[in-house]
Image (cartoon, rainbow, N blue to C red; front, side):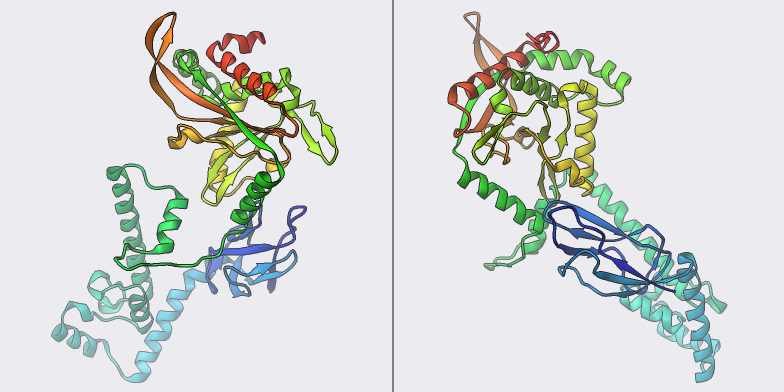
Length: 431
């Protein structure tokens, strides 16, 4: 029975999607609910699972094609997926034996030829020979289990799997010895240009839909807001001491690491309560004041920057904030953040410090009116009580829409965050 695999319903306001790389090839066996391919929209990446077990009989679209909801992507011939691959090798080899018998070839003749030509010419069925050629496998590297040591297709497949496993182990060992690997986006850039060459190389590749959307929003923010940035410097010693004192107990109690983001989220929420205009937005000729605190947290992914939202951040504990951010970060790498999770948000926090940034001017995420930028923490000499001491200092930046927010409010808002972080007890006492 043939079953169609169709484009699922797309998120609201998304009219089309781009076909990503197929995870299966035409003719491959598939299990029900196994991911066949990814569809990339301008906001999220959607997985398309197999609707039935069987064989992927026909692929109707290719990577890079544009599709809409309801379009047919592929045809699956229903049946037991495990049966498709398990009997194929035996059937091929039986057919090979029949063909050899009809052509008059015998094992003894092949063995004689093998003895004269060496180990590279071990006896192999036609199907096995073809598979070896396709995967650059030499006959001497395959142990034949057929009659008189004859190499079957199953023997070749086993050698291929062994070679693949060995390559993965080598790659893992290289990662262990060479340190951190470049991020996926950097790897993609390198792959686009290929190997380093002395020639002047250029290659044109289409922007992904998500990258196009990011570009549109950033350009919109720069052209349609009166953006201005104010800066301040925060002494992180108190937060770092508190974290060092309780991080083991915190992790044991809540099963999540105590990071820095929860402190910044809580400090931002408290500051937003004191300066509601920073949590507002412009809707045509009106100012919309939000009586809730949905904090967007910028996270990087192989496909670009995503901003999932912490709903009602004022009502969440430190452990809940840390757990949610950790979950967002993990799922962003796998393309699993949903459209709903990136919708809305009244204020955003971005942390360029994880990449080593010392100072930047973050761009507002419309229709929000402000964004907080964190940066790297470095030991610096500062004056405390008339003496020069070394402190872990971080630069903070708040970019804001000057159409809505006056400089006074932005500066006082950022100073409030600074004071709360330098004396974390005030976060608990809300003073």
